Structures are given as structure tokens and as C-alpha cells.
Length: 544
Ligand code: GLN
Picture 1 (cartoon, rainbow, N blue to C red):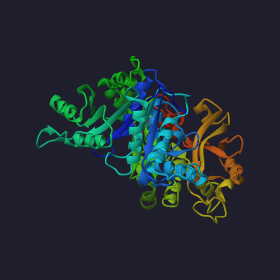
Picture 2: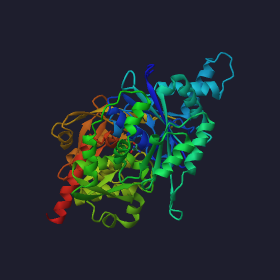
Picture 3: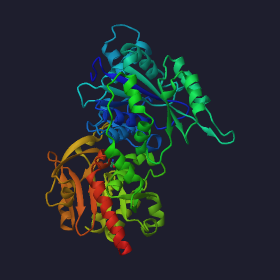
Picture 4: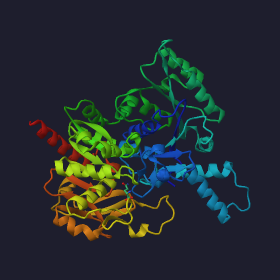
């Protein structure tokens, strides 16, 4: 258990519409409390029946965020890590699928001693157990924040809300707080904010036995005092707990908006926690750098899921962090790999100062990505290959520099004569897709003379993984002779983890996902250095 009898619980639900930013709100509250000296963790409850998002298409779910302990989780965990600078783990994300899975396993074992297994109390007990065992960094937490996925009124989140109702009763009013995030739309024709959707949403909450203690009202512009009064009155919430959550330019301003509105102190008071002032100096200076950079640069991301940028959430955020630390705004140009195949590299990459190929799966667009790596190599444009991106760079190099005609990855061409990327031995006989990749943190040993170890400032690193294929070590010497060096390996398995190209301003590939570890107050060194290289490239292009 991660809790003591003093642990406080904050439940964050959303109403009216989805996509109001519950994840960011939860992460922001976590930051404000951590800054007040609290030991905080955040749990995401997801109402869907998949055991985890690992088997979901990125179009359905966005990015799969991988934790150190190898869990495939909701992308909101990425926000939690980036905001509160704490590692999340498998215990920070529970889905309906996981809850039922574990109850059904217990039933099969005979743990319920002949009882009828029911939503109440068995499923709700399991949910409460997951809430109480959230997190792993501390033995006991001062505060556990629980974000409930979905929108109030959804059938599928009902068991979660019922479990929360029970937990509020068990832990007591002083130890629990319900925060409800809603939308207060402004209707231009009537020149009025409309509070009715919020009233209805809070009513639905009450029907299930939950009172809203704090309302975070998303609004486009400052709400008038009257609307606030009305919301407070109809929703049974004191006016000082009706919070304006104004739209902001960057998600990183949200904690500052909340702090301005007094959210941090309000929560501390309501939970009977000792109030203290937070120190948000570093956060503020980061936001300032994001808002007013003095330089800008354009980097292309060539992938397969470019229509839904949530698929690359952590990469986008890593560029925000890296941009700020380079005093630059990074414009991302999204390139569909299939488009590279039809339009050609010269056209799609015109004017970019760097190219990144992110992780991915399957055949579609693969030749476009391979051509992209070739373009970056020949034109000496800074290039960053992540996971599949690194694999594409290797395939391209094998074909066009080492002369291995038809070289490919076994994922795309199982019978190629030159499988330069091959399936990992332990992946060969797996039949289940869920949770079976090489997942989570693994150590990597870097060569001291390599660029990458200078960038990290260290020879031993640990990064997170999510893949089934690996660099085939049969070809490593051939690559090295031709100028593509393998610069980092796993110390136990000798699996290739990083590569770099000689005689190129910046050409790195990594088998892992560095984007998952970039944080606001600790930008990832590879992204920081890559952005610096693209700025240099762009100023050379301009002839500065
Ligand atoms: N599809 C590749 C593999 O499984 C790359 C995975 C990824 O980019 N995350 O190895």
C-alpha cells in the first residue's frame, strides 16, 4: 500500500465534453502540491476494457507512454512525469480491463469462497485497492491524485465513480476532495457565459453520490462575477471554489493560471494540510522562454500517424523543452512518409533544418522513411532516428553505402537476403501481442569517444524501450568500415542501442525512446543537442 491513514485523495472528474485537459489539470495540481512539500503521485483510471493501450492503434488512443517498469500506459502519464518530475509505474494507470482481469483471476482461483462476484463490492473493492496502491516512488504519499478518464454520464466509468464514493466515505471528508472540470461556453449571440451544462454535469455527479468540492471551469475569456455566483449557487460550491480555468497559449501555463486563481492554497486548506508558498521561479522562467524565444527553427517529423499528433505527444513536448533551453521556437513540419514516396524528398524537406523519424510499426510508408534517412545523410541535414527511425537509417545505409542490395528489416521483408534489422530471439515464438515487446528501462553503455556520450555527459545511461526488432550484429563491422558506428550497446545482451554517422554534422539513431524522459525542468540532452545542431544548420544555410 502506498497510503497511510493520513493520505489525502483528490479525485478529478470531467464533465460536459471530453478533451478539456483533465490530464494537464491533474498534472498541474500535482505540481502545485509537490511545490508545497507534499509527496504526490497521480493515478489515471481508464474506463476502457483493453488491459492497456499497447494493442490500440495510435489513431484510437494517441501515444502509448512506457514507464521504467515496462508498462504500456495512457499518454497522460507522460504529462504527470513532465510536470511533477517523478517516475510513473504500472501502478499509476488502471483500466477496466485490468480490474476485471484481476477479479476474474481471483474468482478462478476460488478466492471468493462461493460468493456471487459482483460489480459492488468486488469490482469496486479492486478499484479502491488500485487507488490505494498507486505510485511507487515513496512508501507513503501525502496526496494521491486520481484522474478518472471519460466524461460524467458515461456508462463505463460508473464503477470507478461508485468506488470513489465509497472511498470518500471510508477516508472521510477531511481527507478527500472532488474536483470537477467543466466547460463554461460563451455564446456570442447572447453575449453570455452559459452555466447550464456545468449545472447538469454536477447534478449527474450528485446522482451517483458525489459532491463537487471545487469546480475548474474552462472558459475562453474571463467570466463575469454573476456567472460565478450562479455556478456556485446551483452547484452547491462556495464561490472561492469556482475557479476560472482560462484558455492559455501553452499547457505549461496551466499551473501558473491555477496558482493565480488560488487553487493550490484552496486545496491545501480543504484537505487540512499546512499551507506554505510554492516556489515556481524555475517553472515561470521556463514558460517565459517558451513564450518569447529569440530564435526559431523548422524540423520535419516524418511518420505514419501524422494526422493525429497525439500519437507523438512526448516528442512534441520534448521539442518544447529542448527549444526553450536553446532559446528557440521549434516549428514542427509534419510529413506523411507515404507523401515522401509520391512527392520525393527534395520537395517535402525543402527549408527544414532537421529531420526526425519517430518510432512506428508496419509496412506503410516504410520506403518513404528509408528515403528520408538517405536524404538527411547525403544532404548533411541533422538527423535523429528514434526506434523505427534508427532502423530505417540502418536499412538505407546498408543498401546505398554498404552495397547490400535489397537489405531490409525482417518486419517489412521476412525473406530478404540481408536482414540488417531482425526479430529478437526472445520475440520469435510469442503468440500474444499485448505486453510482449521489449519494454521499459534498459541500461546502455556508450563508447567514450562517441558524440553521444559527450551529449549525455556520461557513459552509462538508462532509457525506455518498446520494440520487437533489433540491429543484426552480423552486419555491424561492415557498417563501421563504411562510417556508420554502433556507439552504444546493452551491457548484458550486447544489443545495439545507438548509432552515429561519421562525417556528418549530426546523425544519430537510438533504439530506445528518449522523448519519454524529457521533462520541463530537465530537457532531454539528445533533444537539446539536436535542436542546437538544427539551429547551427539553419544559420549556416542563411550564411550568418
Ligand atoms: N517496429 C519496430 C520494432 O518493433 C520499431 C518499434 C518502435 O519504433 N517503437 O522493433
